[in-house]
Image (cartoon, one colour):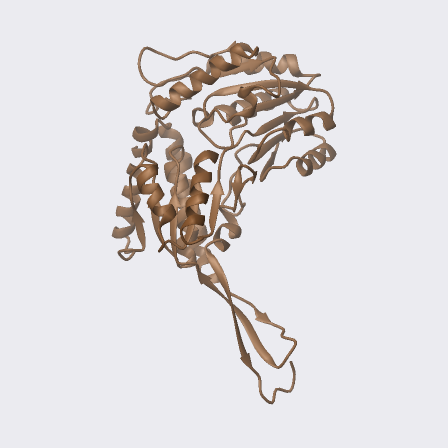
Length: 398
């Protein structure tokens, strides 16, 4: 309920996806907490050597507003399992659930000072966490622009190591052999989930020429059926954008798309007389150099493009400064293997989308950042390796 009030997220989706997913992730890392160990080294001299995996120390987490609960547990769960203490700076738009989880942690017996939540604005509270000399590690999820500032603050303070999960402009590639109805539903899900306010939104959609026209028709029909409104209503498919700034940014990009020559197939307008609601939007006749293809909009806007060959679509999919995720829809395993190995992105989903799992590391390439959340990779970044060596005397073997 707090995330719905703060961010306009669908209450039903939070109930069946975000909250159970957060609990699942916490349990995953709880299971990993007693399986952290170093190695015995095979030294080349009369020495006994081994490594220790030690907690990195105090970790600063700066989390975004689009998935307040999910991001909180993405960061906090592995850091606590590694033995670190944490300082969480939630987004100023969505601080309530983070404060509530700190309250729950105290009720659960987590000692004072282990899990700390510091609400505030980015330039003040966020900057303080990023530049603090007693913060040993920083993990940030948010925009590429702010990621640069975080990286600079870390470098100019105590050179704390950082991990960044930044923007995305993820391609979804639909081949001629795809099940058309399945592909249309998948792309609708990839683009409009959470009103498009998701870093892996599949908003660049490439459809092979043999099914392109049929795909456009069905995609527009499905988008028009979407119910936009009160996020507490279980019959609603899409709630409001998070705030006025984001609402105006999305409408600005829709206007830019039309002025740059793209064809508006459906949507493109506000919904209702009040609130930050926007119709699910589809553009065709889109070129790769248009702003709606190159920039992360973070709203319910889909750009549909046509392609002929595998080689062509690989080049188009990689024609972006981002590299967070990609989707592939095909029945041909050879095409799936070729394209998945050719697209420069941190997560490739074949015949599915948003296939997150606690055991599957997630993070980007290029300007989508570096470092992983989830999986054992997500735990390792909160650990550091210490080598311990002691002499061996009168040993019968090395």
